[in-house]
Image (cartoon, rainbow, N blue to C red; front, side):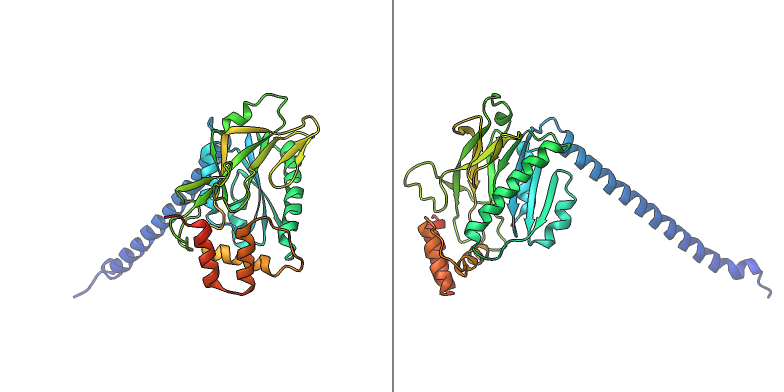
Length: 304
């Protein structure tokens, strides 16, 4: 029995057709998914820069090995922060992520590695003043800058900042300190605490600073005046802005806490640190006593 050529080649034709259909589907899938990602990026960018909910208030921060930076950014975007000026030190794993954020101006740098308690404040001053210069000359809508750290979250009405009268050049906000219901671990979100000590009240139980954080107008007369205040030649004192507070999540991970104080323990000069919590932690870190460090953390940071 003679078999026609068309029947001989029919399986091959069917196989080739299936391959062609798979190839077309894959190309279609790739094109569609890339378009969706591109469109999502455009919409995200628009939501960051064009939303009517955004203010003209930005944040300046110097950070190193921050925890849950995505949460930190989102919480402040939700408040209406329009732009972030971030100096990132020795955290290469976050460089690409932050560079991709359309509302972030990023500077990459390094720490000195010694005497960080004092020298970190010098670098902060330099970066904050640089951020003022950048904000004054770039295309962002930033008219005010608030200086906070990556373990601090603003809470309140940011819109009140842009409503301040022209004669107000700088302001400060009271801080609260997070208290944890247990010693937080690596898997816990940094910003999950539900209890806070009001550091503006005497005997509040705050173990770090109690004098708040600050913000200032993006103008040539305003500059950084340490980690907690800004200053202007056009005013004598900063006003207190009661519509905003700073939630301070000091050492929101026990491993971060240990590393912080072990770093402070090996500095080559003695620092005059006015906090018992800091000094006790440094002494325990010098002894490389993790059990003692945990006891100190529980003593000062955990509430039942």
